Figure 1 (tube, rainbow, N blue to C red):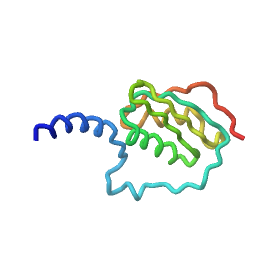
Figure 2: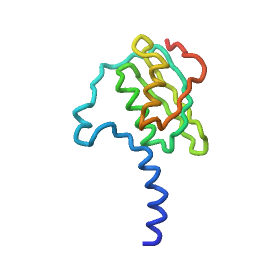
Figure 3: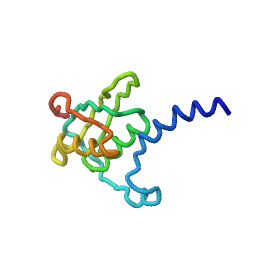
Length: 125
């Protein structure tokens, strides 16, 4: 029992900080969006501060961007020892802009993430 309590104290705060549910569990399936396949024509790299884990935090970021129906791929390079994580988003520039993505990401979990663009958008051919 003594071993379980310290482990729970380590895992529980990280789990709670990555609570990525926007709605109650009952409504999650109802509010899922079905998008047509996206053909990306641009790529943008972002620096994200505030991520404490790859799975839940990364999943929140990926889901938020994919629900725009303007993002084809989100690559998250999570390194636990870094304060700022790097993500690369392949998107359709005719449907969404980097500033819009930053605004959306900064709204996740009541402002858990701080996001900045790294460089300029790159064209994908």
